[in-house]
Amino acid sequence: MELYKGKISVIMPAYNESGHIYRNIIETCGVFEKTKRCFEIIVVDDGSTDSTYMEAKKAECEVDNVKVVHYSMNNGKGNALKEGFKHATGDYVVFLDSDLDLHPSQLHRLFRVMRNNRADVVIGSKHHPKSVLEYPMTRKVISRVYAGALKVLFNLPLRDTQTGLKVFNYEVLERIFPKVLCKRYAYDLELLVNASHLGYRVAEAPVVLNFRRPRKWGRIGLNDLYLTGVDTLAIFYRMHILRYYDSIET
Image 1 (cartoon, one colour):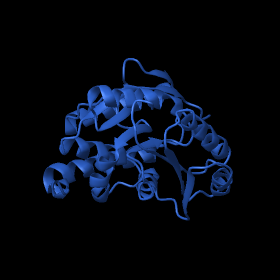
Image 2 (cartoon, rainbow, N blue to C red; image 1 turned 30 degrees about the vertical axis):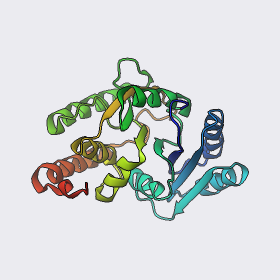
Image 3 (cartoon, one colour; image 1 turned 45 degrees about the horizontal axis):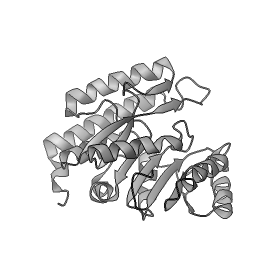
């Protein structure tokens, strides 16, 4: 992160993460404090039914540069990121999953890729040959199949779109977010398809992923897979049939 000057906004969406959200916010703040760079952490409680909000507010009261956004109804991770962006004031915006399966200490690698490739967007990629994964086989298979489908549908020059660690120039999200319709499942894809469509340079970086959830699928169920497919086809329809995204202001 020493590779760039300017402020960094970190958006951490959270849903029913009360068991570790306080600790993870504090840990993330510690990572950024060591960089001596200006930063803010925006935690978005996506309608949790446990004490996630109170635990996040506890962290907000104890450390600087943390803001907690809360709403009562669960609307999905994509919606949480969009809401968080409304509060972002940084030159760069980081998406960081609040479970810290992808630790923020590796963000320096994404910023290095951004600098070396003069990229506007850098995404962590599970399929990068240098990535190190502790990841259930079922999830690996699902991820590979989905990546293959995206190659056919959108011809994206990316091996992975769904990993929860990404860096954007603020301008990219400022232009694209107003046209993003996906709230839950394929919001990453909708953002990246449009970034590529608008001519922004998107690059991939290797990640270290330590899957901590006890269930082998994590929170993904068969219905989630089905709805992800529906969202993906809807994006294809809007992109190639309706030309809905062509109206994004230049």
